[in-house]
Image (cartoon, rainbow, N blue to C red):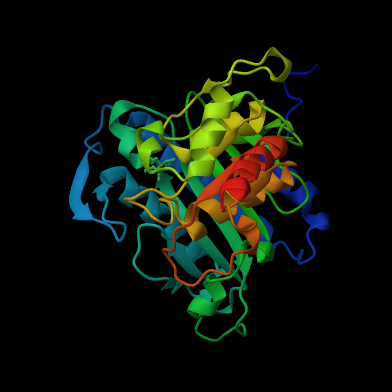
Length: 337
Ligand code: P6P
């Protein structure tokens, strides 16, 4: 096969533009801009070890977490890129207290909202563990040309028009969906392009990997404790015991489970009675991707994509991954609720 037989992200977006009901290239421009920002962040992440950008800024974000220098580079990169694009009227970031109406020349007339976690898992930066960017795209609900409001942002995941993530690992990959399946692109640094490497990703219906922070086990709801015990039982017929894999970086844990099959759980704990992960910036976009790949995402009480957000930094518990594994875990939860 010719070494030039590749499809870049830009080519793929244009080729698939006809699938998107709002064509006119608006969403295509947003996805291309996200791809550009991701390339710059990938460069910064990869040189972090030798540049003075590892470590903390000394600031604390709205989540009460230390803000790493790379977090701010990521946040600034997306804000700048999306403002210049003109398609996005407002931006919400895990790093920012409030939504940010974009002030680019044309932004006020933009039809889209972007929610972003610029660098999820940033506490892993200093130890060279994979981290990621998570993004989601909504159409605004207020009239174009008016000042965007929080109502434009606090939309349930079933209103999403696109979502995706970038994983900065042994290679940099961008994985996204516009509601017509999930496709993965690997960055080829030699040509500076994301190239299609994982077409039509399907998460296996079953898996042998469970991912959660068992250090919190004493706090887990009884149903989660019983499910984890079940995963550890010896039963050749159902390939148990399963393997425990937990990186502590949601994008990395979910990317592995998306490709290999598995379940990721962040249940309620005493420190985080609604779970730790943010509905708008982590759970909704990852739920969209996993459902588009044939998996399932649930809070333990409802489908993640049906949760009506009430506040920007709201947290929810999450059970996400292979459909049969999530259903098994929910069975234990329901049996004990
Ligand atoms: P814990 C990273 O801080 C993060 O937001 C997710 O990427 C990750 O899955 C989770 O928190 C890890 O949380 O409590 O297990 O360290």
